[in-house]
Image (cartoon, rainbow, N blue to C red; front, side):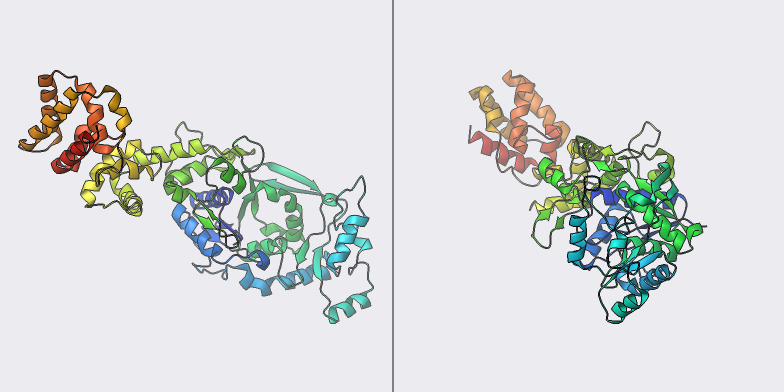
Length: 506
């Protein structure tokens, strides 16, 4: 049987690191086994639906190179791929479960449910649930006479359908990461399967959709482990147990200190993104920064995510998508959570920038320079500049500082680094240097350097004392590649103008 996996996010907001990693691991496993990777939008909770979130999810996956084979934007044999468009599929299965005695109608009002939570509270049960302990004290088709149930249904009294969990059963399943997992059914509440508006809950929809879409492997976060017994019983009750996918409950991505799941608030508090791309909250208008806008290459972002919870067994840490697909194995996915380290994430990005070709970096660097209103010239010049400075860049934003001075004069100069050792002799040197530059037969790096050093020897000044002021005059600060390379690339006229501007301030 061909491997079929799905990534099934809810369109309720930004795509968190954990969600992208779930999609990534599912994608890597699928592609390694030459299967199909499906994007399914789980939008049954219409109260939490956010306009634009679905397209945002698609855009995030595209940026990461996690390309679905089927989805709302790529219809296949199992369309539709939005649960809201599959609404009619779910109710018959819920009714089938009621008829078989595995589920029941519950007519309890919100007030009655709240009263249950208060009235049945005890030292041994501080948070009562709708389960085998309480169901026979509530208003449902288990406690009502059949005629009364029929009367309420005929009167269109609002109801939900709940699964009826057995009281004394050990539910066991094999997890691809954690091995055999067992749960006591009596500890699981009677989850709602069908809501009063006719929409399914996640519990029913995920089982029905996975069955109808022939999903063979299901990847999701470990926070769904408590729900696994409900889903396993649904597969069994619906007669589909032999078709149940293999489960893989992925470890959490933890806060940098290792205590608890990484959240958006942690990113806000510690100053790093937790979303793949910028996301604006539709209600508050708050913009939450993403890794893309922070200056990350998608290759670095994906590489970093892959290593948060998985290890190849090799010494190397840099993997392309193709290499990840080739190397990925479930045996090396960790059972325990992985601490997020933003400095390590930046290290991955720095390494990917260093190892990327100028041609690959060119469009992204060009975009950042244009956003900074830097007048970029022809691509050949920019490619040469990228080759010179890429080793100095950790984030794509760094190219603005590291390349901007090649196109325009610095907005300010670090005069404080020149002034302590400045002298009349050094001023005379640079004035003489500008006159000598006018007579150079060509303005190439080697010629510039030879002229500079020859004049320093004539003036009896150490070259090392002159190069730092020269660098600051050209770029504005103590950074950049070789100063004579910079001089050649910005040209004689710009060199003369910038040196003159600084001499006028000293």
